[in-house]
Image 1: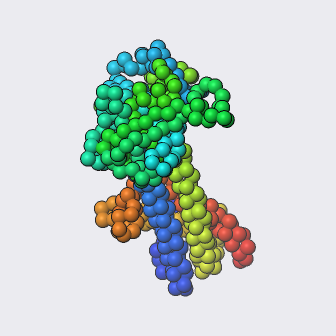
Image 2: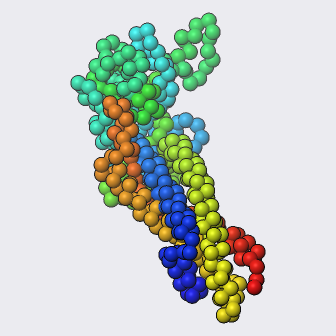
Image 3: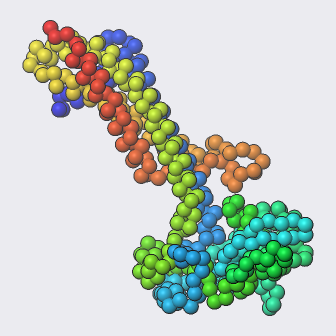
Length: 409
């Protein structure tokens, strides 16, 4: 085994009798290197976008969210929820009532998602970091109920951060039938005043459709007094999220689902994972094409070293020994290309993180100026293993076929 590897290494780095073989071997290494580098860089960019989206949701979504598995609401005084509130690692628990309604402001209207929350919502999330306007984050004052719309929803309805007048909301009654002769009787109608601010999560899901208000107003609008649609939790610093989630799941049982931030946005992150997987598959096909250069290099090397092979046979070497030499030759090309590709890919990712070499565009139209990059070393390991497997498999058939067909003297 060591002798075969030693001879293969000499064949790789020594000068051949025909210079074109050296050129093709170099092209083979470069091809594998470029494909590997592309895999590392592209997957890191997808990771960067995923991490960037996660930071946006962090400002609005809680660490853990408890929601009913069936139906839309559950009793606010449920014993299991009361027990969750008293857990040592739970710092803040916020009751939420969320539902869809029709919003009307002046002559404009839009379907919105009304989210009623407790007064401690600002402590539960980082909402104060993403509100803009002359006012402050307030949900109510005495009998006045305030509404805080997403920035794109405010633009759609023609509102400013400190909009005058009332924002009217229409929600269908939970029980009863709609009277066609008097359809307005089938809706609960209420209004909200401006708190002087709008919020901007920089995600269309929230900015285009959400209105924040007090949980008391949402309960009146959706006729769910004494109920909630979710219980949102913030854990104390240093708490193990996975262990806390597992303990809460044991308390609430199968009637409720406990979701972390990624599970709350499961659809978004699943789409990004599928896009990343498709990019990985396509780039792997490019890697396979690049490995055809290895086949050509090995074929020419076998022809060039045929006399060496006959000499080894005369010295008693078996065909399996000779085949191992050329298989190791192909594997060394893959390994060298993989190492160089991973190294250059990581260097490019580092430069992109530090200096933003590739920008997204001019004029500040995007959330970030340059492509975000996040290197996950698990992905790097997968890329390296993929290159080795593709390279190893690509050399087996040509070596076997070429040496089997070679004439025996």
